[in-house]
Length: 327
Image (cartoon, rainbow, N blue to C red; front, side):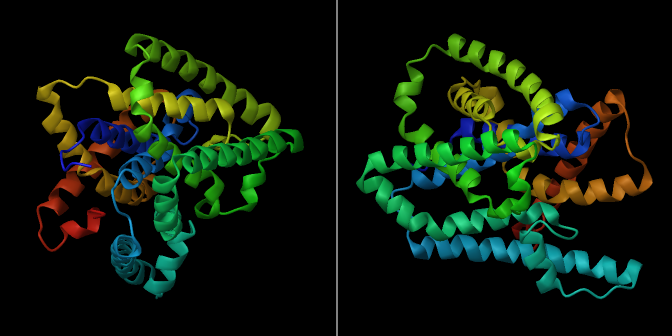
């Protein structure tokens, strides 16, 4: 794997980041937009799989380095949050306990569950990486097996009338996150086959599945799952196809040279935006809650740009830039 930066991956990270912010900003005020934004989390896992499974080496030393850096970021932000909680709420909280809870989707930094899921995947990455490189069939078999688990969970949930995954904390739903991680890696290895599909045909399929999946999620959530939370659709067959079509389309989309630098710069700040936007959202919701589509369409870009600006300022401070970057 060469060291040349892949702008298409930067584009995917940017789309994923904007979608995650949109998902939290819209928050079911408009279901069409809400389900349109639910692609963000799977895309993030697929990008990680693409990058890490394509590496020539991914041993335990490398994995340990990645995990330690994630934990540094998690601990640092929890220490920073503990200070205003102590000052304004006169509440003393153990930041180490806060950090642990945040990895399990609890507390002020509940969105750090993503890091918790990544850590669990990283722990098995060296074994997965070796098996995949020794036997490429193992990669396809693992993807197929995990997809079957996802589809079983989705089907049984619709039969039962409630999402079975609700009983499992999000970071522990490894059948889902590991599947998307491996799927991203599979897209990297099978890129030659994907390129054979005409880009226009690919775009038409993506458009049709976007429309169908968006409508289907509304109906399934309302009438079958009796829950409309986006997190319960990640195991759905049509959602999986939609995410894969979107990921591979963005991966092969021609990008003009004039757009490459802005995309790469935005991409370098996506982790900061991901970390900061729920904190801003919490503060803003204490002042007002946007209602209606028009308000949301203003609130979402505003939240994105505010998080971007803060991330940019942090990136310019040498001692602080590690807070918004995963090495």
